[in-house]
Structure formats: structure tokens, C-alpha cells
Image (cartoon, rainbow, N blue to C red; front, side):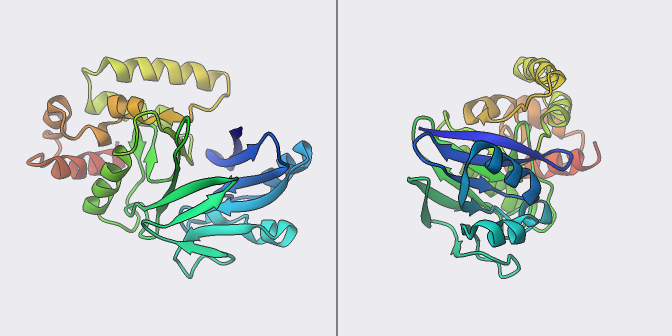
Length: 255
């Protein structure tokens, strides 16, 4: 059975570790720092067989040189020559096999132009989405356009509702506070905020989240909702769902 464990890094990153009960081989996703990965591998008696990279930002790739030198893993990531150490470059529609499972690759530009996400079907399906989609939020637009990010989120929203979403940052509390402002009549958002506050008070991660839950609480996935559109209209154009997204993203940047 495949299990997924968060490895905290920096102030709010999660490096996701996948392992099988029947094998000492592990995979990590977006290792921005090698030290916490090595510590967990040694504590658990694991070896690093593969690494998945969603995009080029240093807090997702900074641990690669040391991990590659120590374990010589397979390293799969976007077709970006700026990411050193990749053994397999993948793009939209490609597949790869990790931990005995097939992963489908989706290009999801917006946060960066090279951003990809890894999805594997199963019970439940798993989505490793880096900084594209967060619980109750989405990534800031550093390189891409609002149009690109909107399309990327629509792609991810089309995955099965029972998909577990493994984002790369613990941003849930801040995102839910914005969601309350953007979707003030949504009781699910208020309930989610209370739950997230309780979880974080125990120093536990709020992730993973379910995609079905995100469709209820994430304003960036609810741009067609009349209440979200009405609130967003106070901050910019809401003529279309995409325009509503653009307004929400700009509002969130200064929230």
C-alpha cells in the first residue's frame, strides 16, 4: 500500500514522501532542502529511488544536488533546462512510473511557465500540484498570466472529486481568511476555517485536502458562483468566470 507523509521544510513548505509497505524505496516531491529528507530516510531505513519536481523555484529544487549525489535517484520534472539533474523531462500528456504506479503529467502554467502536476489514479487518486493549487487558494502569478492560471485550475478541477490534493505549502489558514472575504455567505468556508485553526493549534498539517472539498471552499474554483462574483465585482471586472478569477487573484495579492 502506498502512503504519503509530509516532511516540513523552511517556514511553510511540505516535501511529500511516498513509500510502499513492502519496499524500502521512497520517492519525494519538490525537495527544496535535502537535510530533512535525509534525516527521515535514515530514521525509517529508506532509500531514495525517485524525485518528482513540479517547477523550478529554489524552495522546490534546492535539495536536488545533495540528494542526487547521495542516492542517485531517478529525477522527473518539467522540460526546463534551468533545472539541473533531471533524468526524465516530461510535459502535458506524458506518463511516468513511480513506486509501481502510473502518474499522468499535466502542464499547469501560471505560478511559473514550467509548472506541472502529477496525478495518479487509484483509491484514492493522488494529485501533487506544487504551487498551482492550494487548499482554499492558488499560486501567485510570478511568470504566467491570469488566463493561463485560470485554465490550469480548470484542468485540475476536472479530476475526480475524491482526489487527494497534496500542495507544497501550509497556506490554508491565510487562504481561508481571504475565502471568507470573497465568499462571505459560504458556511463551508467558516467551518473549514474553524477546523484548520484547530488542526494548526495542534501543529498538524491541514493537507492533504479533497478536491470535492476545494470546490466548496476555494473561491478560485468558484468563479461561476453568483455570490463570489458579486463580491469580486467590488474589486474589478466579473464579466466572465475568467475575469472574475483575474479580479480575485489581484485582490488576493494585496489582501
